[in-house]
Length: 190
Length: 181
Image 1: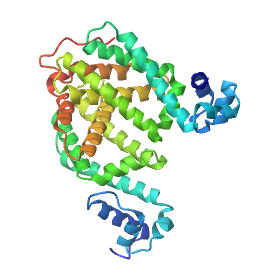
Image 2: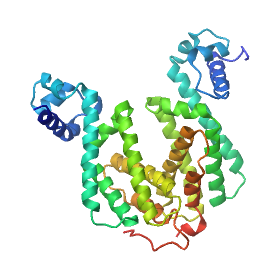
Image 3: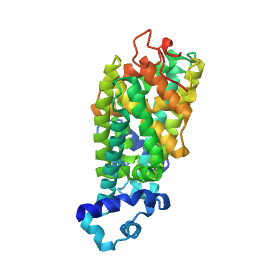
Image 4: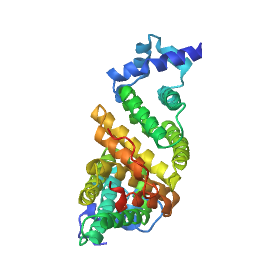
């Protein structure tokens, strides 16, 4: 029962985020959107902060599943990084309103902790992919690439759509940074 | 500390001096004492400790910017100047642990976030100028992304409390001439 209620209240978030800014988010608004009594919220979450943390975890899990599905069967290396990056950027845009909420919640220690953990895990995975691609300083490159990828995600969110020139700049970095000279043929740039 | 200076300047100078001594950024009472003023002076002249910290944040970043500009001013635009600017910037941040602490503390504060955005924009423009001089593809976009990578490097070095040569080399190596294809 509690689990179903949690899932239900998490599921109403994307649509609610399209109507209500994070600064106006409240238990009452979540309950109204979910069609449940305000008292029911406490059965599922301790408070609004716990709800936002669960929302963030849910968002990351959905994205993780999407990434696994999209990259399944692709060999480790630059093309898989590019595919995963495109998926990540696309997922952010598809869920832009919710993403804005979560960005606004970065000041919450629980959310910040989860982001750091996620960054660490993605950093390790990326470094393995970079190594598979024969890149020098794979760990360092992975860290820099993630910072750049998140910058593109932020730019696209603020612009409200795909920004091809930024993606091309990102692919250029992916294609050339740490590459042995002479480096491999360039990845696709539209 | 000259008592002829306006109280805000005296407080800011005291905060700057204490920040330069290393360690954690000083608290309001210590700053006021160093300025020869009562503890209430920070609230009275800045309207709160956050405002004083934001001023200090801006001052320290300006200092770093001026240092980078001074060292690179007479060099031709391009890869060597860019690499020197990056190295100087990272070292200047590393030499100012109070700046990293203030950045962490104030990044969600509206004024602090605005100051940080301004500085990021400034560095990104500098990056762009150098990349254009090098004929780099997607120069404005690369400048923005490399600024994010630079901030990541600075954050990692601040957390480690030392230079991280692998990160620096990964970033600087990207600007080797053969890569501008």
